Amino acid sequence: MERHERRNTMTPMIEPDTGFFDPEACDLSMFEALIDQTTDLVSLPHAAEVQHNVPIYDVAALRDALNVKGTRRQIMAEWAHVLKSGAGIIVLRGAYADTAVLDDATAVYERIIAAEKKANGGGGDHFAAAGSNDRIWNSLQKLCETAPEVFLHYFANTAIAAASEAWLGPNYQMTAQINLVHPGGGAQLAHRDYHLGFQTADISADYPTHVHDLSPALTLQGAVAHCDMPVESGPTKLLPFSQLYRAGYTAWRRDDFRTSFEERYIQLPLAKGDALFFNPAVFHAAGANTSPDIHRMANLLQVSSAFGRAMETCDRQKMCNLLYPIAKEAQRTATLNPHEMAAAIASSAEGYSFPTNLDRDPPKGGLAPETQAAFFTRALDAGMGADDFASHLETMRLNHQA
Image (cartoon, rainbow, N blue to C red; front, side, top):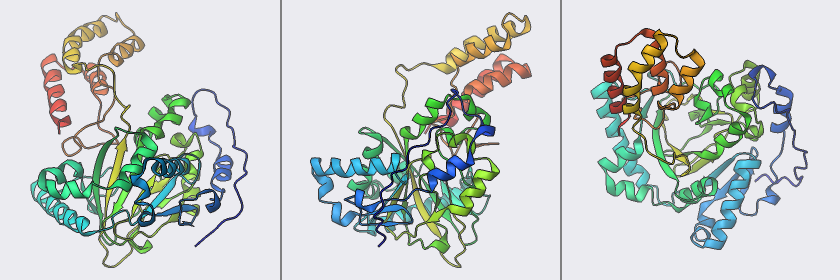
């Protein structure tokens, strides 16, 4: 057990805020000063120990307390503090007291993987090289459809519910994807995650700085270990405190930041039934599976805030079909300049790739599928006819459906 008596008294580092982050202006020395911090176990009364600056929580000791509102809130407040201002990572040791339900779910997932491979070659992955792993997109719904009783007991987990609510508040939405990495599967490059982490560098830089601050609060990343995961099996490489670097969504693609990550990352071995959660702004990457015989299976949980919704529903496909012929004519006659056209498209077409059905609508050429708005612009530039435009929009709609 590591017990660090020195409290972190580091003065927060403030970056000049010009309203937008420039990848070229990102300060590696500031980033490295932030990740040099140390976790103080004394300030985390509910943690059992600290490993590599990450607090480990023994769920067996906390399970009863998580069923009592007052103590549950105290634990959740501690978890939220770690995720926001501390290491950015928590491990829930023994999140599943009885791992038999994991074995049941694993058997279901293996059947799904086999069926999907037979049908279409298997689920693609937006980070890993083809063939190095197996992916089940929307493992949440597929488990529920295939084995609802297994699903019920799998997600009747108060520790996972408390971690989700600690970061996102109530009424969160759960999604999940199975990732099965076989021996020899390579490591990922360091990255941040959904939302801004799935945008290109240019698009990410177009979002103002306060959106970079808010993006991590909309999602919680997690993983449930379906098998024992020693370090040689390649558990997630993590960089504690890296979520504190505000410009990280624009910095993580830079070679110097990725080099720093590779020099300083940590890996935590997990046992079957453990769960790991982290702030999506933590720099992380799947590790290389160098084991001879461990097929590393994790259910990757991506939990979303209830507040990621618009106030009204709009039939944007219908709006696009009505506007497209008029927009084509406005483009032909130069009635609108490109900036004006872009503004009109932004107010009508869907400008975001998600949520979608990643089996039918996988990311191509990036981390996110093409948006309705991007297609609208591309169709105008290509001179696409209205019928072909409408047909493609309908295909996009069908691909988005569950």
